[in-house]
Image 1 (tube, rainbow over the protein chains, first blue to last red):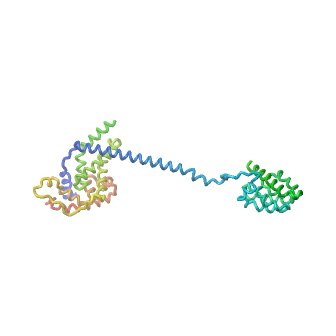
Image 2: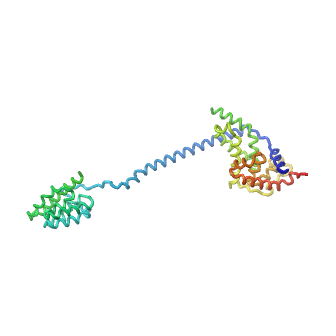
Image 3: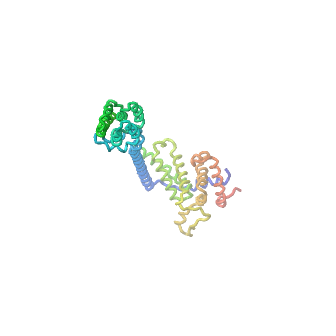
Length: 192
Length: 168
């Protein structure tokens, strides 16, 4: 420390002037403490409100984001009944080719377009079971109707139609009734 | 409990007010209003940590807060202060109030330093702190403190050449 630095130190200490801590400073200090306390409380309240809002928003969005991810969500099915011959048309596309091929051997081709959709229309199963059903149904050669409704595995309900082609003229109504009955049977079987 | 805490705090502030205010005035380059604001701000912060550091080193805490706040507030733009070579307002002859309000030569010279240089010089030569503690207070490396202090002293040597008589 040279001479200038010593003089600088002396100047800094000598320059000090007395300053008393009066009531004015005390009141101002108290006011500053109160103001800072209010600021801290407001900041804490704002932080809590933000946390609660964020938590609420997260809980609000939680169930909505989880719903579309469920793969096996059951789809609503239309109610099937005896008069549902025309209603299941939108769901015909997956199962219509097997029914068309099966209705051929029944020799009552007029019944197939109007009736087979009612039998399989109510079902919304995957397309693979109908193909297996057609494979098992074709050797019967007379079980055209049974093949069309064989997707549910209720072959007992569909064994009666082989007698229907024998009646000949009764095929439209017979096929319709058989299709309707088997359709309901298949529906109940799948639901159960 | 609260009363005892407030009593201890008031005793400390009343005992150390003068020295801390002088430190604040040097750190702000002689601006009394800014010095008082900074000291109030530092003491308000001290109030909230008083139960923790009352038995340790409250003055060191205030010194650290004061030095850092002085450096920080000097960087704010809204102060609008710019160091100049000459004081813009010259006291008129015979004006007692202006003479009283006039800053000392040392404070005017300190006002021409950068905040970091001023803090390093004040902490080293007024508080008699070693470079390591100055670095700890300012939150920068020791080498930076030495550099700031050396440049600040060199600048003060130029400004106060005629005020401090040379040796011999």
